[in-house]
Image: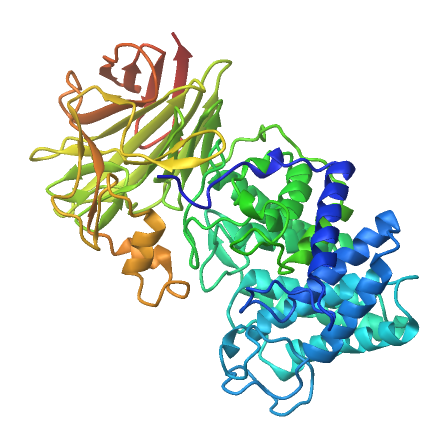
Length: 610
């Protein structure tokens, strides 16, 4: 079974002018066929996310006219714009809308669902989207619409801005992408007003960003991030926020948007596997965006020198939003306009700077969470997630049912690179059920094809084993599919275990249920509103790779050694010396220094290819 939204890398989509002209030509033909006598351009099946969609297609037609001067387009733009001004502008409060600061303001807004009171909670983002579609039409209006329509649309856009920033609470869903989108709308709107009024709108937009978004950023993996639905990052909406930051910088030139975009881009680079797979988030776990991410990934990937385009998007939305039949939907049309107008080329090479929360070389990568426990491993085209045992999740030694991976003190990291190998040594103090402080040293080494993981800890009682991850997905090139298989060997006995029974809080990789579905089933709120990250943390057990201690380890240590990916025989040896623990494998010799580190407490590591 393939994961429905994990499809091709976004930089594989052609993005030359001819390709975009072909996209706009297809949009034009479909829109002209769909245009109703009233001037509507909405997809006939659209029911929600609808308040801005006709206007979104209008903006695409306006951009197409700018590029082609197709004589059929001016009349279509004027008719469809008149439809929006006449049929899709609401000024009476939506019954049940919970986020008003001023009742009966008379200001215009866009509805998520057209029926009064049917689903008012979505009106704030729908109005942001409508504002963005409107300012894009204004940007393309020269010679296309008359002064009267231009004036009406500019007044409407100003009303949307006031409703978003005065009549309602700002960013009521705590969604960073929506909030930054609102700021972008203000920045673009400001350019269509006289200098004094325009500067007031611009200052208000930048002030909202500084006070309501930037000041509320959430720290994760060393980065400060715009919060998304109450969490630090969502792999659907996070790259969309990056696109909004790119547009904000392009429109305003303000360095604050570049700085924050660079930080978010570096964070995304560290999260992503080489193959572009990622999972996790407070709104979605695996539902990736598509074309909405292109602008930000391309713009900031070039700025930071990283191949962010490897990010796997939902290529069914590779160009624009679509309904189930594949027909165009105007939702997010502003992003397609922006990415067509921006000519920044993709940066296709990986960043050369070592990242604390990532190890990467060739086709192998490890992403680390805050605690420097792997959150995602990729080797030989297989993606491994942290496994769960007794409600504990992670990679690390297990003794008496207790997983030793949560640090009790400072976690120290040492990166090292040779011509052939890339390595990361993680040293962390941990405490088990016996309250004894131990030091876990985890060495990850890759030659770009396989990954060697060696974990050493002071000797444990009982029958310890290494929880070495859960094989979850595999790369089919243009798609990602579910898997329960693993190309892994261990110095000690290795087994792939599965929960004895599949239930809502036990996850078996052999079953059809995806990680996202399981996470939502365990979330406290309904699907689409619950936090899948919180839900997944309620998982009791999962399928898991379990590796027994390696033979021949020094008497005072338990050492675990596994290799992910292809290779020949695997029989590492270990030697304890005054300088530390020497590990010899078929590919390298490594010396992991004393857990106490050097005179400054930093980990010591030596690495020699064999």
